Length: 134
Image (cartoon, rainbow, N blue to C red; front, side, top):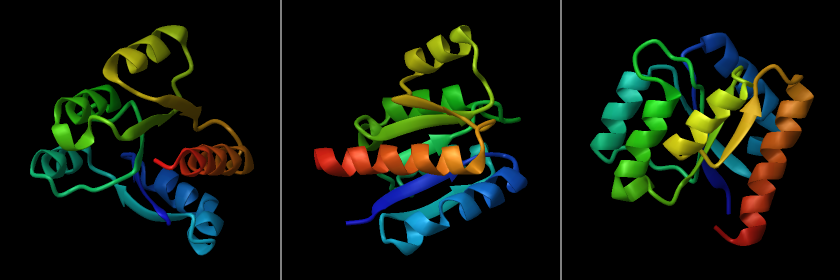
């Protein structure tokens, strides 16, 4: 069964790149993909229970609500406490990863990876989750 995946990033060009990068995964039926480019809208939709996902890939540095705050919000809402949330970001410092862990991120993927590396990492993450039956 396809996993419901959401990508949250304020950069439309990044979302376009991600869409291209994971198109094969969509075509294979491994994932369904949705994206948000506004963290405020996403946070509001989460609070109202309008968001449904198996895996959320979230940017960290967004203008209105950071990825850390999005993750913390998700962890505070019953519907999202057990969901897989992965940072998809340019942040690579140990301190930013520590903040991410404290916020509740399950993993970390850097956007500075080549599209092929990003696709492989995302695909492997999804396949690992499927193998665990989550």
